[in-house]
Length: 333
Ligand code: TRP
Image 1 (cartoon, rainbow, N blue to C red):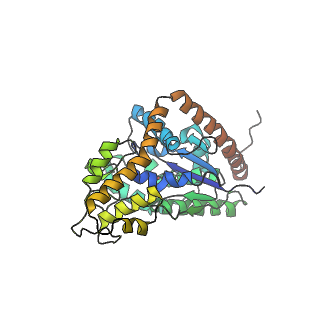
Image 2: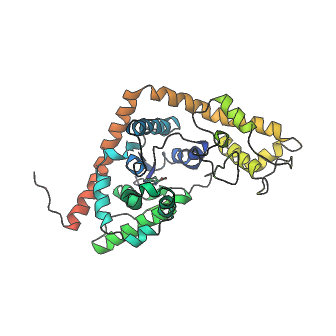
């Protein structure tokens, strides 16, 4: 049997997950789990590059793990783990740090943006964040990395570092490729549909959370900003309707054209009502499972502990090679 290709991805435990996070990432991951050997991490080490409250970070890590599973990632099929549990990520990061140029990191758009916004906490971790991400990816001999556009530059760094190490020493790392699924919908704000949906939006009506109850979802969709055309059409001039069509299509599996046909001659009212029901129908079972899992901490702890063991075994192999090639003495006992 052919060996399965390896996928690695991760998300930060930064609180609540939006419909945008689900459709943009997790839903695509669930479609990969049968074909690939997948590693999905809750990247808490990345999360502390911005100030965190310990108790909240712990809760958020549990919540994200519960969400991974509630959204359909099967802990039997995938390796699901907490990044800080596998110390090899930090060990490889150090080695990669010594091979990364200051200039490379200074050019990272995300660093430039963040450093402009949070000058009070311009810590070194924010700067070397992409090196940790490279370590995450390279440790597992990853073939494919599903990431959003905002992470492309970081993935490129991971590829550069892998090549640099392989050339300086000898072939050690697989060179990872980005994975950009076809159906990967980019979900926009419900209030300003030319902006990406974000949970940090000050207007709660702009986003839908995976943990929103059905009535909240219905209300948010009803209030979503559209236009005065009055025709359900997939057009950049009607970004609000276009966004709802994308959501409807991604969650129902129906092609956009088909949905457009269904609403010929009808107003936005019917379309919005149905869109809300499609969202409720998709999210409600996940929300129930999520709430159930959060009340089963023992189960979640078992999952993440087993995940860390599996991840560590794989990570260890790569790290051992790296340490040997770099010239560290082998520990004998
Ligand atoms: N930096 C990524 C983000 O914020 C999360 C992440 C960390 C990641 N390590 C990764 C994504 C490795 C893919 C692969 O979205």
